[in-house]
Amino acid sequence: MVDTFTAIDFETAQGPRWSICQTGIVRVVNGIITEKRSWLTQPPDNYYWEQFTEIHGISAETTADQPTFDKLWPEIEPYIAGQNVVAHNGFGFDFQCIRAVLEYYTLPPVQFSGHCTYQQLRDNLATLCQKHDIELDHHNALSDALACANLFMIAQGMDLQ
Image (cartoon, rainbow, N blue to C red):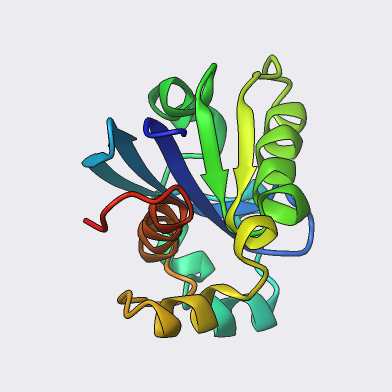
């Protein structure tokens, strides 16, 4: 059983995985949520595709005064490097975001053990949250990460927080 992990979620400004505009992290230690963090980041050129803003509500105006991901990476890295990292559709999206944004900013790659609640539970995040009575403000990175943490705990046979 994995009872210490970081649940993570990213929102992006455009199609490329390196265009992160929000990061949500929930840290779970010995089955207990110990931290919830969220960062807005300015994507490269602070450029957004309109349809992405419609999904998550984050726009160029929202992130105009926010740091770029490379400036926040020293704060985020300890939650990921050498950790069990959990994401919903992690292999299809979130883990790719980590790799792509580090490459974009020419930062060293980071090693972690990836776990995917989509692969474990075989349904979309909103449906699973409804099924398990988990609150969700979908496409808010912190809310999605918290939902993912709770779903992973369910999959691991732990109590919800």
